[in-house]
Image (tube, rainbow, N blue to C red):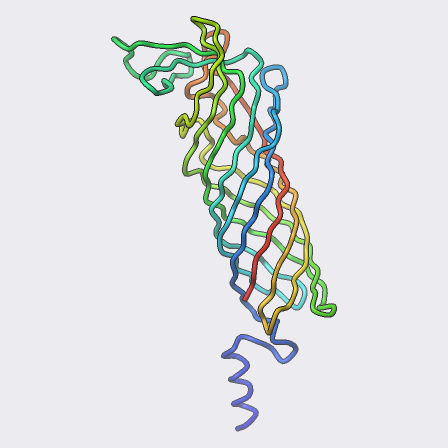
Length: 259
């Protein structure tokens, strides 16, 4: 009877007889600051224009597959973006505080009768987008060395866009003056979903029992277009909708705690 009670107690606390740290499921919280760079596919039309800081935060769940292997997932909120330079290749029409939407042939989606239009050549754009992240990664780790466990991981993050904004530097086609437009709504210009491969590694420091502080660094390699392939408001030099393809690259640091 004593052996049975001991077994039931161990199961109820989700541990094994090896270590209090070997829980089948761990939960945690993390923050992930980083730097993103947008890289255009066609260097004749667009060019990269430096890095942009991004920030993610959320919850983490780790499912143990064995003593040294686990699946890591969770749910995160991400604020991200990038900067692009347009090489005299795209512009848009602006009226009453809004960028006008266009069809693929460059015609306006809405009736513009009676509207006062301003036409601008787009010089540079800083994208700012909000996402909900769904990361999944395979994590391989060492046995505990002192209070430290080292690990490497590889995975895929699916990001669902919830909001898109832009800060533009533009040239007024009528006057030739250069000016800035801030906080433009470009929800229809950002791809609704993006996919990013992640590879990285770090260490866990055991604080007590199954509670650990986790620090890691990651390289993020986006392999899908982060903006719409056919623009919904940018017009090319031929009067048609601007064709665009931009990929994301970045580095990030992550700090969190697992229970």
